[in-house]
Picture 1 (cartoon, rainbow, N blue to C red):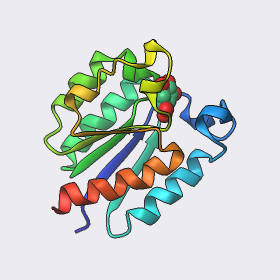
Picture 2 (picture 1 turned 90 degrees about the vertical axis):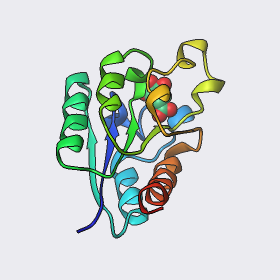
Picture 3 (picture 1 turned 120 degrees about the horizontal axis):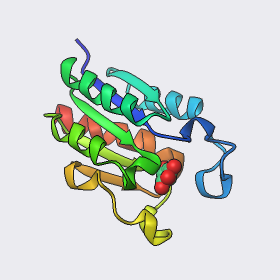
Picture 4 (picture 1 turned 180 degrees about the vertical axis):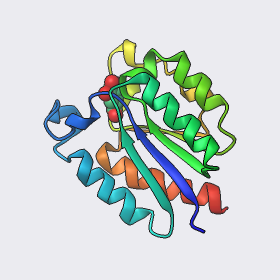
Length: 145
Ligand code: DHK
């Protein structure tokens, strides 16, 4: 049975490609999903996006209940606001990769303190949309050792 990983995306990422292209690029979320599935051949990938905080929390719980091997999460703006998402991720037994398209540490101070980084195995930021397939490859190494 293929190892299962969840790729979760937070608010406004459904607008990827149109939204602030100077920061996030012109690649759409559908294209990002395609890149993840290519990089993740041999893995089962659940690729989701929501603008609702509770839905992202429910999907972390689902990943726990489904025995997922790993979670890749771009919490977007919830990165800097959500203790609830942090608490949900704390319960996940496998590796967690926090992902940002932009280098949040190079941006305004409001983007510098992440609630997710303290519970993440690793953080990828600033590689643009290509950060997603990189995260999938890194996750494969973490779960296949
Ligand atoms: C995406 C967002 O929506 C912002 O709120 C974050 C993140 C950065 C990204 O770079 O992927 O700050």
